[in-house]
Length: 231
Image 1 (cartoon, one colour):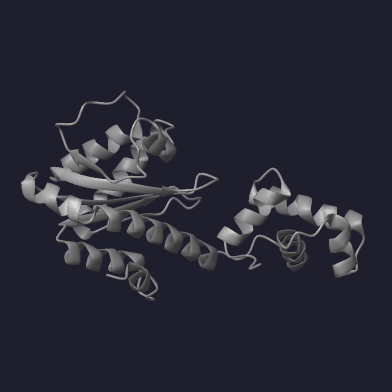
Image 2 (cartoon, one colour; image 1 turned 60 degrees about the vertical axis):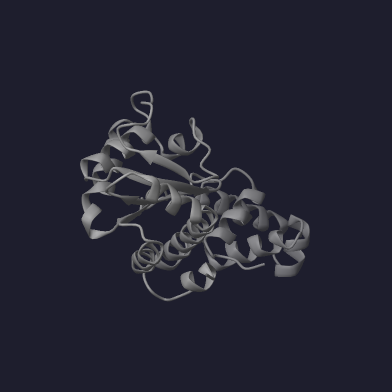
């Protein structure tokens, strides 16, 4: 299956995930994205899962990265049997997620994450109501596919965020960052744009402040991720 083509569709990501879950044979799906806008989505049967889970995480001041980096390697899909897994320390996001799923009547799930800099993290999960050999075989069959699907979900969420929001940068700020992305120094940018080097530095500093980064390299990376520039 060419999953990249599936995610290139204009359909909403929840519609795509519903189709993916049906194709694979999973009962429910959910996607948690710890972006600036805290996107949460799940199928109708799990509608309250994401909302309740993130509410607990915020109350506990736990970031979603704790879930990814704490004690599990989520570069690889991880199978959870709710209520049977070893309990984790109080306040950890993994515990909140497992508890929420169990309350929703789901006995098993497989989760995988995609993450990058700037707390841009997505967790994709598929779950069924019963745990057994069939579920294990299902997870094994789609283990590699799930890693790719999670990355594609993450990218689609980021693209959607950049399309939903107006650009935080001015035209001149984007021009300066584009030149930097192409390897130009501040002086070279000033010559290209026919402005002073001091003005270039001013625009770059403003860009870094708006993008909440600490240097121009990070500003370039974030601008590309948000679809603000295209080197």
